[in-house]
Length: 158
Image 1 (cartoon, rainbow, N blue to C red):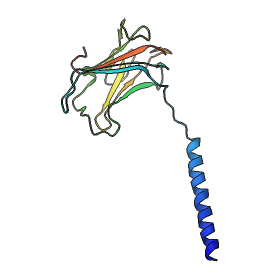
Image 2 (cartoon, helix red, strand yellow; image 1 turned 90 degrees about the horizontal axis):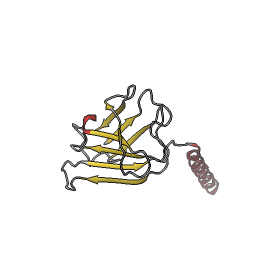
Image 3 (tube, helix red, strand yellow; image 1 turned 90 degrees about the vertical axis):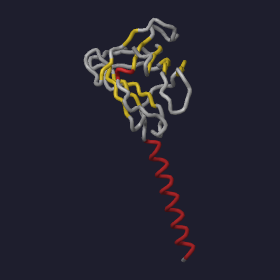
Image 4 (cartoon, rainbow, N blue to C red; image 1 turned 180 degrees about the vertical axis):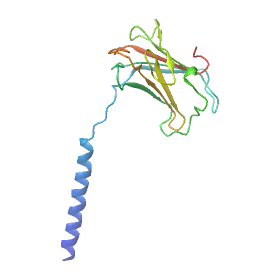
């Protein structure tokens, strides 16, 4: 009788484990492809000291109209960066005319919220993220796949 109860308990635990693992396979996440030519050039490397960042990457998928955005996560645990006081005015977003990150940059207009022809910038001091949301009137190819994106953060932003 005792062996039968143990067998039933083990069987139930195994079935629960299989169901739990299997249900995770049904959940799909939406995310962009891997970035290439990724760099973050700092003006200084010193603990607890503000630094200018020039971030460049080639986007494999581009950014289109609708719900597409670019999210820059500084620290996924939310405790190593202090973005307090940072506003969209401290940030630049520019797109190169190719994937070489070498230079014919087109600056994008930024504001606190997206609008016609304007990228919205949301800064989270809790999650240490900077989110760029495409303009409300953006069309397909707002940022073309395979093109270089440059984000400047700090006093180096114009």
